[in-house]
Image 1 (tube, helix red, strand yellow):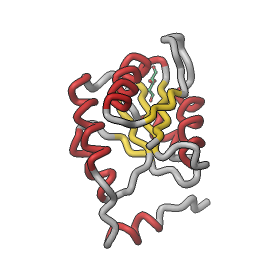
Image 2: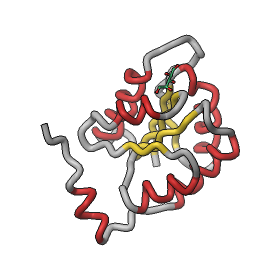
Image 3: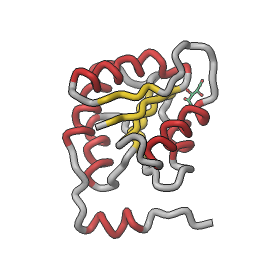
Image 4: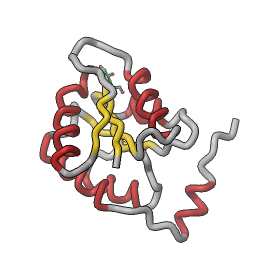
Length: 144
Ligand code: RB5
């Protein structure tokens, strides 16, 4: 499974944690930057990751910024993207089970390494439940 990973400057450090975790667990990480802590704009990197998932180049995406809010708002502007901000491991499970989320957004400033690793573990351990959730997810469409 190929995973697109991106962040802004606030997320660069924990992006390394994410990439290491992915590689250690048998996933291919496509690190789309940035690669230094020089200030950048989160929508630029959120868009890169979202495009890679939307066009099928990568299977899923992971994004980080200070809160995780900016990257999730930005990624969700791309058609076909269901980006979910997971503040804890349980959110990651539910975002996969109920929302079939395809981009996981993480907060670099309000999280820690252990929580991020647990959140990744839950995300990748969980499949979409389908059933009653399917028709709801199918209703998530750009509407104006
Ligand atoms: C950057 O300072 C910060 O605004 C950004 O990382 C993020 O939290 C935005 O949502």
